[in-house]
Length: 190
Image 1 (tube, helix red, strand yellow):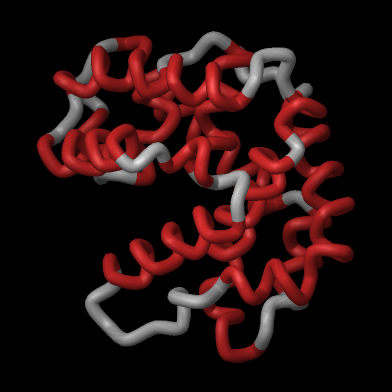
Image 2 (cartoon, helix red, strand yellow; image 1 turned 30 degrees about the vertical axis):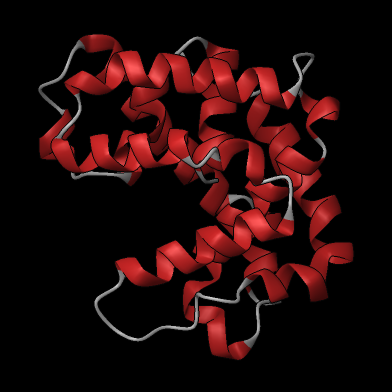
């Protein structure tokens, strides 16, 4: 899962929104000394990632990513899972996506003062460019893939990975529904 999925699960399980995305933005040594609720949110993020990566449907979907991009299949599936969640938001949450995204931005901008500077920049960019709401459109994930491709120091095929969704959405959508359903009901208090 990418940002929207982690924020969605954090809101359901009442964990820190900042903590729920921080592990994707910085190293553990940057967040392990933050407040207890933020660290708890970071640990939840890690549990969500482990559950997602080990889910049989997620593992099976990795092999459906084209050979050219298979090395990045986990990233591609995480981002397209957020697209699926955003595009089908009313199935997963009672609050409209617009209101949920705005509430997340508001809370993140309050909590972000505790984050490392690099994470602060990403979160400010996320809120300014409305990433969460734009995930509902393929253009939104295309922008995410473009940005992710620039984060690597080597040439990579991530830019344009929204094409994987175009060619596989009929197969991926039912699997994403199962993955989200299974993870949503997991007990994260342990």
